[in-house]
Image (cartoon, one colour):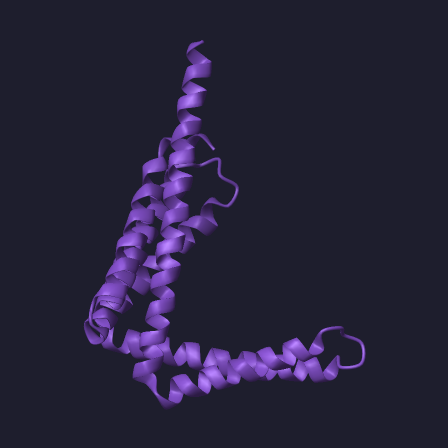
Length: 185
């Protein structure tokens, strides 16, 4: 907790970056926004990766230190891939979401049918599965419209997530001040 309080500003920067990116995704034209999203995603992964590595190396008593270090390395590798192949990253992301939605929908339908007699509310799982398949199919049928819809969802997520990180960072800062006052009293 002490290290989180000391480095509260890292969460503030992450939150501000997320909010700015979310606002830019809403405000800019679609094709430029896709490239911007890919660039910011790469930058975010790079910063997040370095942040995780620095945290793991400066906190030797952390129980999951090597997992955090590995996460940092993977984030940096993803950032390199994003910067080397930005167009492929955008296309891959859209198709990944589409196929994930279809696959998840199929599994939800199978599950709801298999549990039809014993599971209350199974019709909602069935409907969710059907909607997932439709969503995935629409993404595959009209990738540009699907990409724009996904961008807006991502933009909304980034803004809300960023606000949460900003609030958390100021809470951490407040905890640090409260501890410093308690120590000096």
